[in-house]
Image (spheres, rainbow, N blue to C red):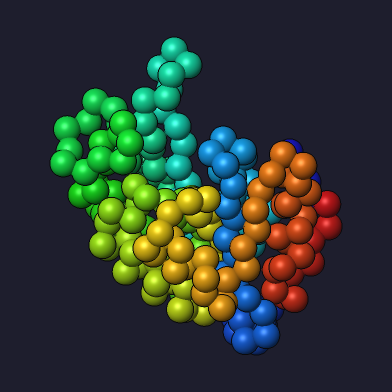
Length: 198
């Protein structure tokens, strides 16, 4: 567990100034199972003073076998994203995706909350990009003044590739050798209104 002290000396104006000077959209990619979701959880905890909003995705397992994925918002709401036994016309690999349910889940999150200065998304992947609502929301967040930290699929064309190529994106690749230090590296990209002390 990371012990941290986050001190926000001022929020709105420093963030806007920082956005103009630095890349405010931070993405993390890497192989499946490398630890991206764990990193996202640690970052949302370390940056709790930014009042983060968003969600992360966890595996659904049965007797050690992965059966699907569940969405969990930062305020605790849960929704099934995909499952091997789900009835849905949308499919990625062996998983059926509940696109309608995903969009209902997205609608339950207060993305426009003015008190939230940080958005967390885990992940920008092929399943999520089946939703036109998600793709529209993602672009709005990328173009906004809000700070974004998101995981993104290692492979994929279309929007996944386009987002990685944006000029306002800083992309980190997680590996076994850097996954413990990446937390501190990303926190080093945070706005100057924050002070981080491990």
